[in-house]
Image 1 (tube, helix red, strand yellow):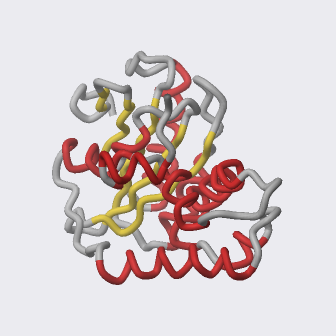
Image 2: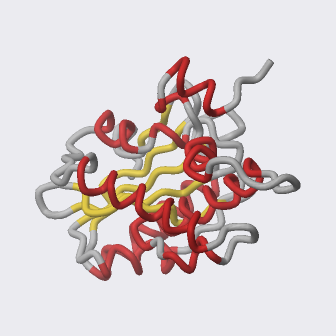
Length: 211
């Protein structure tokens, strides 16, 4: 029998819960007729997309989430930011990057993540750029470098997962990587690496010398 989030956190700790399960715990119990787990999944998608730019109205746009529940979620994120999210995350190696994107290994959809860095290879932001269909990336260079420019980034690292189970780059992956590299050479932001995740492995364009 599948454990409920409250039971799972008591038995295994918070790291073993999905994002939507943690949100369900923040939302608590609701009146009869409302599926809190369904609402939590919708909220998790909004939070994943907005990340640091999440505001109250983003949560209020979700049916069944009112001002009280929305402010509880916002307050929880702000508390975590103040006490548990530390600055100066250094991305000097592939293993450093993998640690930051570990949660995307088992996603059933393809996520494209952009990590912007300063000149000392310290992470500025970690963003989800697009969420695509299985084995299909919907990214365009303008969607990637617009945030990098606003961050005044020195360089960027791209990461995406392969739900199919094969970390080898497709022809589309190679074309997209080359296109992004060419665009960024023009605007002065370098592409440090493009990493493809799989459940148990990864592929690094930089390590394979094809970047």
